[in-house]
Amino acid sequence: MNKDYIIIVAGGKGLRMGGDLPKQFLLVDGRPVLMRTIERFRQYSEAIGIILVLPHAQQDYWRQLCKEYHFNVEHTVVDGGDTRFQSCKNGIAAVPDDATGVVGIHDGVRPFVTVDVIARTYEAAREHGAAMPVMPVTDTLRYVAGEDGGHNVLRSDYRTVQTPQTFDIQLIKRAYDVPYSEAFTDDASVAEAAGHKVVMVEGCRENIKLTTPYDLLLADFICKQ
Image (cartoon, rainbow, N blue to C red; front, side):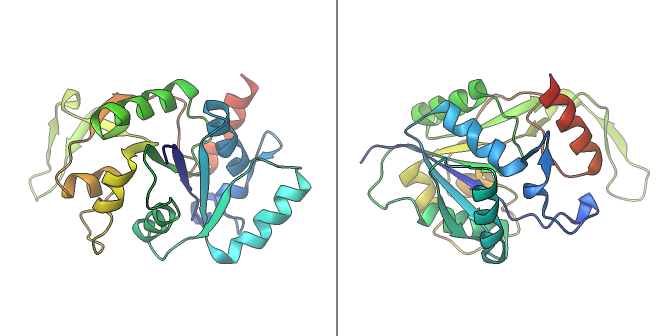
């Protein structure tokens, strides 16, 4: 069956936000972050299958929020794991084994990814098998390993990586059928470890990951624009 999917991974505990409420449930301009993220993918496609990976202990609270905010975007909830790798693996397992198409994996606390970026990543994965959105580095970078004080490196040699990272469904299912390794820093690194090239497409500046209280201020500003 040919169908596209998106796996939205939301396992944050909110510690860097300085509060007890996990960051994916915090309000941005009066609406929970996670709802904004899901809605952005529904804007991209009415037909896309949405899989939400959420810690089991947070799922009752999520259901309460859905009722409170009359959130009725259809989605499937699966249990998160002890690591992001395991959470992604659980999400991938929820995609039917006979599915063909593209599956994306996206951070639940990146609610401002644009529909254009989503479309670029899905089309690139459809053509090349695997894709990720990136942005140029604007700050000066310094390499600091060792005891000599380090040295600056060419920022033109580097990119910052965003999500969604997108893959042919069968490709990423096979790639994730391995034990966890510390080399797996994101989903693209899992695909690359299996021998697959991941092409880069242009991301967007507003596709920020909400991690600190400052990010929430920036998120409110983006909403008001």
